[in-house]
Amino acid sequence: MEEFTDERLAEGVKLFNEGEFFACHDVLEDLWTEQVCPERTFLQGLIQLAVALHHFEEGNLGGAVRLYRSSMVMLAEYCPVFSGILVSQLVADTERCFAALAAPHSAYPFHVQLQSDLVPQIVSQ
Image (cartoon, rainbow, N blue to C red):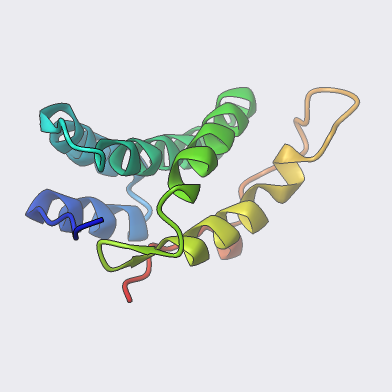
C-alpha cells in the first residue's frame, strides 16, 4: 500500500496525542468523508479509536468498549506500519489501555476509569 498523506491526518494525530479526542474525530472525519480509497478504513479506525477514548473519558463505557473493539479490527489491517505510523504499537498500547474495560464483567463496570498513564499515543516511524 502506498503512503497516505494529507495535512489533516497530521493535525488529527497531533490532536489525538494532545488528548483532544473529539477534535481529532472532527478533523479526521472531515478527511474520511472525502476518501474513496482503501485507506478509508484506516481513517475510520483512527476515528473510532478517538471516539472510544472520548467515551471512556466521559464514562460512556459501553460505547467506549464497542468502538474500541471495532477500531482494533480496522487498524489491524494496517499493521505493522502505515503512512509512517507505528500501527502495531498503537494497537498494543490501546489494548493495554482498554484491558480492564474489555475484560468480562458480571455487571456494568462502573468502577473502571480511563488511566491517563495508559492512554495510547500515535507514534511515527
